[in-house]
Image 1 (cartoon, rainbow, N blue to C red):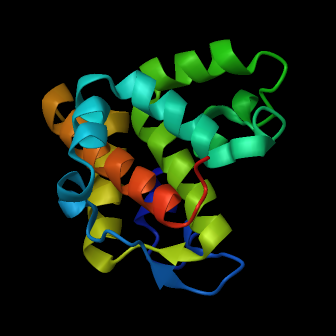
Image 2: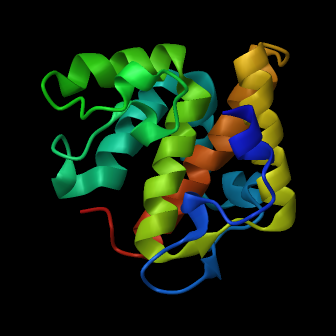
Amino acid sequence: LLLNFLDESESKRTKGKMGEQTYEVSPFCIAPLKSPICFLWGCLCVPCAVCKSRVDVLGDDFPEKYYCCQDNCCITALHEPSNQCPYPCLALEGVFCAAQGHLGNRSVLSARHGLTDKAGESTVIKIVNICSILGCISNQVLALCLGCMNAQHYVEMRQRGDLS
């Protein structure tokens, strides 16, 4: 898993149907300026933000295409669809795998719209993922980064008409 995120080649996150483009709000650290309420919610209630964002990102495909962390998880037993009990699985994902959950949301959004990460974003995302796995980052800093990502995802979905 760590090698997957250290790999500099294009990942499945950057391949999409519409060609390559960057996020509307990029780098994601400026997303709080575009959606401050979503940013605060993403910082203060990370599990809730992960869960709500996943349901929004998958839209009509939830729960049929729901996987734990959308397959960005290192637990191989979870690579099967979790649609038999999606809400409890999603709640557990939000609590115990928040960073990987946000990466899963990002993967779906990126693939759907052909979005790529800018070099700086890609590096920060890799660091956040590695640190979350190793437990080397404080909850406050992690929440700040995830809040930025949550706000960026919300702005992107709103901009592209993915939210009803």
